Length: 225
Image (tube, rainbow, N blue to C red):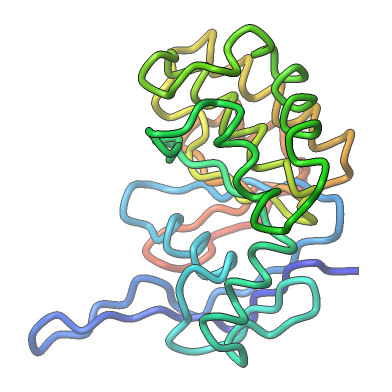
């Protein structure tokens, strides 16, 4: 069964009198539990595509179905509800709240869902990513790798059905990046989450089940690893 279905999706922007086509009739599907990498040169539309798949933005044409729901038929509030219920995010620049500790950052999505076990689950996830000793630290007191580990714990907090990762190792050195990759795939396997990631890194892309290459807003090829 497909958890994500992208059908004839295009995204255009008006720039003065010109229309800029960022994505041009893109089609692909992702099965529940599958991991895929979206790769391509800068400006090829990878991050735009990820945003459309996650319901952060709307397509100009075509349909995106996420966990059976057609995102184009939903209001902004309804899309936000789908994201909070079904989706986890990992960003290149971590996007942690600077005024909250590591523990509080991971608790945020759990508290939004009014989970009574918010503190226990956040603590357990931070232990799992090796930050048992850093839970009371603020983002500015953490290294880049530690901040990304907090964001991974936060992404998995709500047991998402699908995880979107945008260049998750882009701001990290090689050794730290490899550790972060291992963590993402390990937690993904444990929780049976579907993974869709955008990356420039061919080695990271090879670790997924399938690679989708995009260039000039069009899918060039989809490779099963």
